[in-house]
Length: 173
Image 1 (cartoon, rainbow, N blue to C red):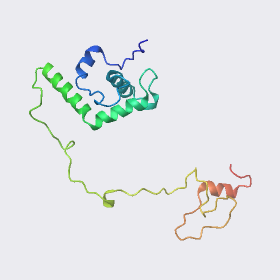
Image 2 (image 1 turned 45 degrees about the horizontal axis):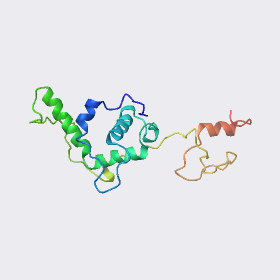
Image 3 (image 1 turned 90 degrees about the vertical axis):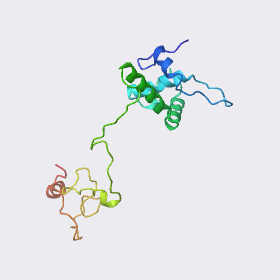
Image 4 (image 1 turned 135 degrees about the vertical axis):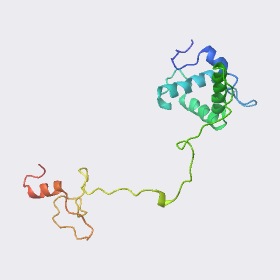
């Protein structure tokens, strides 16, 4: 029984362009369990829908297999070859040279000298107020009944919510 077709699946015409560019299983090894077109369709599904690999429908090969082939093809440059071939085809169809003869670089796309190390990082800002989700009191005790004031010279004043709790006899208001 043929599997259900999804809108992200390659058409026969698209597959005719991609088939020569997509490598199959290596010779001498175990025969491929899933045809390359099914793998490409699974990868296209994830890319088009933005779904996670684990959310791949069961109509496709297992997500681990699809991801493994996607990763292999990324590492061996298959996707770059596919993109290059499709770009050349689109340029030729538009009546232009298949490969661009010049490139335009602007200040946004040119890498400049970057300063590395800790001097290039900005330290995190400290909040001046207490967090409403904090589970400890300013003195370091986890019990709100603790009435010892902070003794450290760098300790901050108690938060307003802590002061309200201490002032009220009913507890948190």
